[in-house]
Structures are given as structure tokens and as C-alpha cells.
Amino acid sequence: MRPNNNPKNRRGLLDYQKRQLELSKKTANEAKKRIIQSNVEKWRSYLPEILKIALPKNLHQLTIDKIKKIQLKPPYYKQIIINASEPTKSTFVSYAIIHALLQVGQVTPSEIKTTSLLDGYNNINGMFNARKWKEYFFDPKAKVLLIEGGSKALTLLASKGEDQFWRELLEFTRNNDKLVIITYTTDEKEREKKVFIPLVTSERELNSRLIKKSAFISLTTDEEEKINNEQAKTY
Image (cartoon, rainbow, N blue to C red):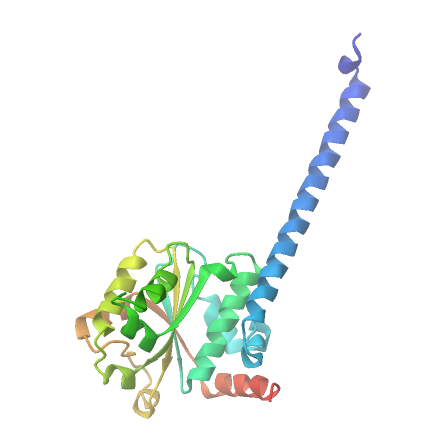
């Protein structure tokens, strides 16, 4: 009988192959963890101290519960609009969400693009110096687009590139493969309403399209106070 037909030899070979497979999986998992940790550290190195603490564990439980109700894996049928009374609060939540995505290896720092709305409006035509901004933000490889600075007051400026920016964003994200996060600062009248519709653009029909495509995280006083307390620790 040839050795490779010996039942003991076959069992030994199978055991050896099983151990090798388990070792390979363990090595791959450890390598993945190292890459994720490196990406988190790289991302944090870009941030000011006040945003380095923008972590899920530093959010109010109500905020965490609201985030859990939102689809954070592709396809992204909804963009996220985070409403707060101050821009620093909505920004804190947005960076906490991004940190969570980095921690699970869903995105890398190079796949996260950030801009203010005003920069978007001013650079959307892509002419001359604006071309670099447009190539950076509308990167086909991007997976997360963070847009900061939305407010009713901004729409009153009637910025020249406002309409074009939002239409190009809708076209750019039509395949639902990019997560869009928009921060929005509410004014006093909006906060007085139990339900209000954020005004991200002055063009009514376009605003309606954007709102229908959005999921909302509206921060309460308690949720904002939690962020205040965390931010105070960095001062």
C-alpha cells in the first residue's frame, strides 16, 4: 500500500492543512487589524485636539441610538443631515461617525473627502485654482463626503455656485456608493418647531429632492450638552 493511501497519513495531512489554514486566517486577521489601526492613527493625526475626542463612546446614548437607525453600509440610499444649534456640535457627531467607519475598516483616510459648503459653492466651476478642489472632492475613489456649514442663513447669500454644487453632488452620488454627511446649523425659529425642513439650498424643488434623499440626526439639548462636556476636557 502506498503511503499516501494510509488512513493515518491522510488524517495527518488533513490535520496539517487545517492548522495551516487556521494560521493563515489568524495572520490575515492580525494584518487587517494593524492596517485599520494605522489608518485610524493617520486620520487622527490630521485632526485638532477637539476632534480627536469625537468618538462614538463620547456621544450621548440618544445620539448613538439615532445613528444606529441609519444605513452606514453601501448602498447608501440616504444621505445624513446632522442638525444642531452650533456647528461644532454637528461636526463632532460627523467625525464620530467617520471614526466608527475607520475602526471597522470600511474606509481609509484617503477615501474621506471634506469641504465647507462655501468652499464648494466658490469652487464648483472648477476653473483655474478651483480645479484642484474639484478633483479632490469629486474623487471617484471617495467613499465618504463630509459637507460642513449648511444653514438657512447661508442660502440667503445667494452664492453663485449653490445650485450647481448640489446638482453635481446628486449626479456624483447617484449610484449610492458614497456616504454623504451634511452638517446643518439651525436658527432659533427652526429650533422652536417640533418638525422642520432644513433649507440647504434656496432652490425649492432642488431642496425637496435633497431632503427626500436624507436621513436626519437632530440633536437635543441633552445631546449637545454631552458634547459640550467632552469638548471642555480639551481646553
